[in-house]
Image (cartoon, rainbow, N blue to C red):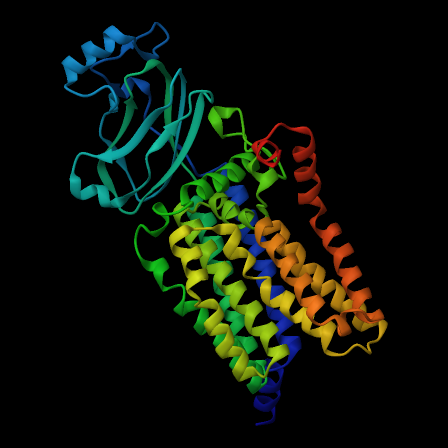
Amino acid sequence: MVAGSIMKSFIKSRKFFLILILAEVVFLVIFLLFIRLNRKNNFKPVPLSLSDFTSDIASVNEDGSMQVYSDDDSVERLTELLGVDETNSVSFLLSRPVDLKKGYYTLQITYDATFNQGVQITSIDQEHKKHILSDDMILERSLGEEYYQFSITDDITDLQIKVLYNNKGYFCVHNISLIENDNGYKRAFVFLLFFFLMLDLIIMLILMKNENRLLAISIVFITIIFSLPLFHKGLVTAGGDVQFHLLRIEGIVHDLRLRIFPTRVSTNWLGGYGYPASIFYGDIFLYFPAVLRLFGFTVSEAFEIFIFSITLLTTFSAVLCFSKIFNNKISVVISFAYIGSSYRLTDLYDRFAIGEYISFIFYPILALAMVRIFRNTEKTNKDIMKNGLLLAFGMSGMVTSHILSAEMTVFALIVTALIFFKRTFTKSSLLSILYGAIGTLFLSAYFLIPLLDYYQNVPVKINYYMT
């Protein structure tokens, strides 16, 4: 009995929780080392080369590469031969049926092209297509080499790689190879990390006081309720600005693979010339889905996990901050209404306005900061500094996620300060606001300085419209 009582008290202690977290971290580090060491030893190329491809329109060069070229006359000949319109792509190269086991693979293609071309992963048997998880691949004309990752959910014997030609310009394929990759292990690492987080959450719920347990359960419940649309297939491929934001994520992924950090000019945009989207549009939160892409998740999977995570963070921020302003029960009700507001859900699932719905994380933080500043004007230096840092954290998060929301929020804060001018123009309040402004500038400097540099020194449209 005594031993059992000691064991129960130990499990409910913080010491046990810290030991568990340490063990989880050690296990994850060992797993990462295993992935690193296993990468070079166990993944062999699939027997496939350019000689395994056939073509009705390509000519074979002395080095074995295959090419096609179309001017206006040859486009007409291709149209007559294949019965297609010049605006549609035709099959340029088609591989023999390939026998692949369930797993994760990387397709590598080296080529020269004067226009963008494409690649499809397909199968002869239509029933087998459901086992191929892949999107169409674009061969950017200026890159000359592309890597494309896809997965097979069951063993198939008739996979085919189809290289497409859009009937425009010169296109020459030098080499095609296929190799297994370690995305399965990397995805397992992420799932294991998620499992540990869930385990830690359950233990935290056990250790919590009843009143805090109510808040934690409310956070989970509200997050799940307003994340249900994520289970709708095809959600992230249509609507609003989704394609633009997926390109932003892919730009970060591409630069991280080139060991470029932080990303300022996405080098895979505009045919390899690059585009400074990250200068004008804060992308610090997009590194999370980008890292998921590096760990083997598809762009749609990474984006859906990202949306869920933003909803979780927003709910956590709302419940925690509103509970400091009101009591726990009222904070849960207000948070439910806040997370489920039609404007936020429209941003999230219709317009896909990433920056705007990320900014929803920081409104409750700013509300809490202003309430703390105005609630009691007689504060210690520690309270003044704490309120200033809270204001700085909320405002800098707003600036680096959606600068238009930040501008409107500043206006609203100024109006609020003027309405409560008797509480604003006190020493403690002014000091907190000053610390908040200075802190915002420091925390946002990594984004604001490049933005102002481009605004002053680069001929961009924002300058044209402002003049």
